[in-house]
Image (tube, rainbow, N blue to C red; front, side):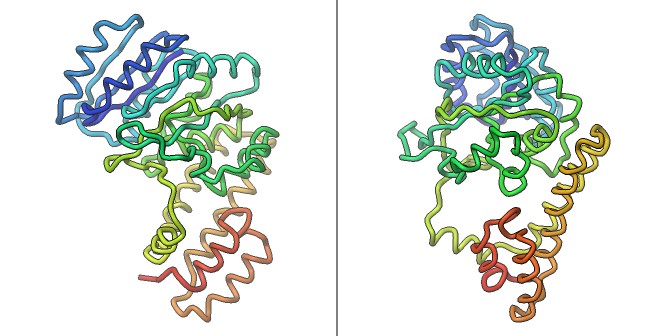
Length: 321
């Protein structure tokens, strides 16, 4: 089992993460760390701490800044274990995280990916009162869909897999790499593996998922007013961006898949058509109504967006620029 850890200016929290890794009831066989040209003391902290850990460590510093996705791509490529566990530099692992992941893979030879819930905490590790899955609205119904082998339906609607909670079998690495530069690594890995393997989910929070101002993504729970404000500011260009991301996903499936993947490709194309429809909404809100009705009749607002919330957003909130 390999742990792939990417670091960048993480000196404030990296030692706490490393300590949580050393205290695992099942320690990793190796830790692969790729630093993305940190400007603080991250490199010194890592070198000092990892020189004393009871497992193999390979620490590399990138020649130039790669960004999060390509840094994870590099770390994944360097892993030698049969299971690759992704890690964030500012989180804390529960002591049995790696053991639970190993057990989940052992329990199902068809499971290519395992992910868990996480406890949301603030910068000082104080609980925020909700879990990651609650923040992502990963409902019990969606969890049942994933367990039954329909992860692609959930993931095409929204990503529910956070990198800090994710592990996958190394045998799928060639399917995953390279990761397209406009994707976040966790969303890409989850969607690719949804087409080629079963998922195993662990409802217990195996990570303390730290939320702070320097989070690249984060998962803070938003109030209704915050959601409304975000919807008003959001431009239609986001749909074109996601459309092009799905183009890359479709190409990867067509390259490695077979006729058994036709239904998944069809669903990806349906999502792409839905994104095109939302991207091409007329500037005049009254003229948007026929397009919105079509997406409602085909149920694509409910299969690939947020239902009535997205309808209201397209009709009344979003603006063309």
